[in-house]
Amino acid sequence: MGNWKELALNVLDGQELTDEEAISILECPDEELLELLQGAYTIRRHHYGNKVKLNMIINTKSGLCPENCGYCAQSTLSTAPIQKYRMVDKETILKGAEQAYALNAGTYCIVASGRGPSDKEIDTVTSAVLEIKDKYGLKVCACLGILNPSQASRLKEAGVDRYNHNLNTSENHHEAITTSHTYQDRVNTVEVVKNSGISPCSGVIVGMKETAQDVVDMARSLKILDADSIPVNFLHAIDGTPLEGVSELSPRYCLKVLCLMRFINPSKEIRISGGREVNLRSLQPLGLYPANSIFVGDYLTTAGQESTADHKMLADLGFEIEFAKEEITT
Image (cartoon, rainbow, N blue to C red):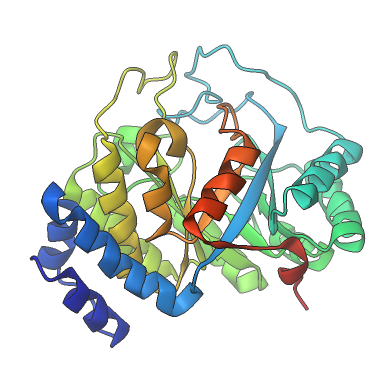
């Protein structure tokens, strides 16, 4: 391609990328990477300026999952030595919200392992969310697996703002990653969430032996789903999982993936998520030129970097944190 700024301006004018243009982003020569990032930043700045959204996760239920997802330390196939516990109590979830508020995280993500939540687990989450809204005014995202409409309605009524259910990979590559649920199961849950009035969050995991076309297909599928927030995870291969030892990502390729997501989903929240530290490494700051959101703190079964380091990185970049009080929904 070469003229990434022109391509960015075309996107801002409402043009969609061709497959050839999309693949060219992923295959951008390294010597053009800064120009590509500048193009992605042109789109990001138009929609978000220099603001960065901070998100924090709490793992409210760990392991014990019947699904066979190849990347996950919590799956039934995994032999990884992780903590395993049932759903924590409301007080533990509230303590996490207090920490998220202290870190200036605008969104607090309540995550639980498993195929989908039980009614008792929904009770615990909804009870906690009501208090979180009252005490901290945080935006709350839930990630509890496959939902039915009744469960989605209960979460909406309690004040859940956003629900995360990742596509993870392309439809073509799905069965290479998991066979215990279908790609359509994931799409259906995102549609159930949208129909309930909750903001849909859905993203991907890159680095699981997919092709460049698979990555383009992921980005396009998320555009069709109209996901408001798109977490981009980079595989952090965990010993004891089927994808143990897989390491096919470079920091530069990860940046190109983030640029692709911005070019195809120009107005959406693009969040650098799991695997950020081990895959982007010293190039982490550059990721915020295409992306406008990150997680602070730890992930589900892997550690993040110190939150103070994230805050320093944002200050060094001259980016502005969107504080929790600015995220309160009306």
